[in-house]
View 1 (spheres, one colour):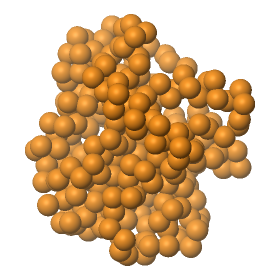
View 2 (spheres, helix red, strand yellow; view 1 turned 135 degrees about the horizontal axis):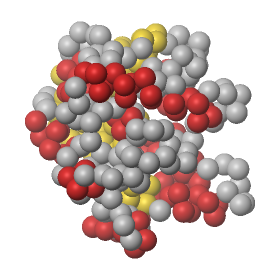
View 3 (spheres, helix red, strand yellow; view 1 turned 90 degrees about the horizontal axis):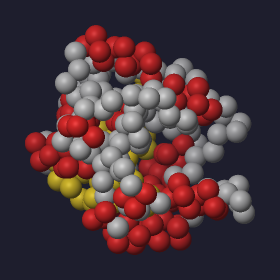
View 4 (tube, one colour; view 1 turned 120 degrees about the horizontal axis):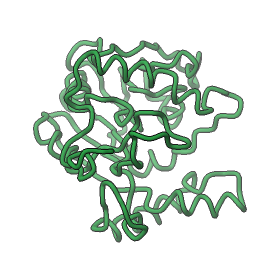
Length: 269
């Protein structure tokens, strides 16, 4: 059973773990996402380009990006739309099965994450840091977010997308999900960013009823519904409309009519 403080979103499960607890979590998650089916590069397709363009990349200045970091970026496909602007691409990725030799014209430099989440790069190093759907696989969220801020340059950008609903009771086995992943309460993300040296450029709720709509859509098309710009724009409107219905751990069907994720564009001060 989940403790009430985690169900309510009053605390982030795992944020106060000991190093031994973090290590156990890391070992369980290291290849878990790859084992769900994404390690077959011939069948894997990245469907979030329009989401990243409409919620993220459009807020970046149109300048060259000397050093870029993707935390948990796996194959690195998220960088395709801006690859011609990047000089050096670094990816921190636990899985040995989710690695690309080339991303367009770039040869990415891969590193495995440290167990405790410290990022092995100097402070004020990266022009851009991306972290899409990664933090909710990590226990000590506050520390890792502080590390992302530390390694970003002053004036540099951090793009972050995470689920802000519990994703069900993670003390039980859930189909299609890894053992430990859980959403991060929106209010806790907001509190963390207030403590970090960052400015919120954009906070966009997204993916309102998208799983439900996708189940209908896939009867007619093999291309995910969220791959289309028109859907992302519709979803922006829908997510704003039902923002007040957001419950971290929904217990009623009516509470599920709400955005499930948040997309942040942060600029380091």
